[in-house]
Length: 146
Image (cartoon, rainbow, N blue to C red; front, side):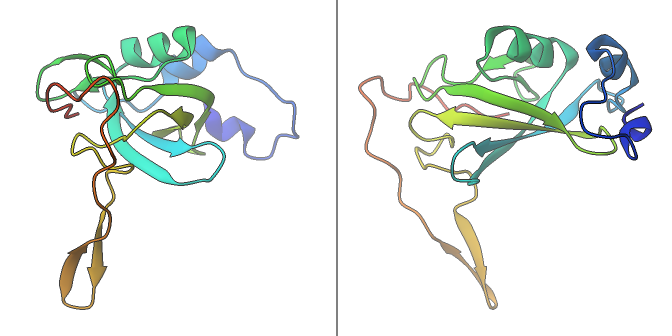
């Protein structure tokens, strides 16, 4: 359905429910979700959303994902305090990924780092690029894995 907007002028619209119905959800009912810091463009993490997580995110303004390991909704920061306030939500041109532009409080990664993308390829090696951030007043009480 989003392909109908490829040549549409700015301001063209489609009903949200119709777009959600047409998204190419995986066989498990998931879609890739990328979290990006809204003001710097820093990519923070990749997670998965089912329709319920996406609808909750849109209605509350707080990032909610689907935890594939726990098989349940994962409200980012619920236990760690490292919340993501959603500033904008976008779909890519095919509708097979969601971009959440967020205001990240604390680290996005369960390791306590700002971003999950802290391992960089440097020639024939992978190097840790960033250290964990200082703990928030509410510590990360358990590993938040997608």
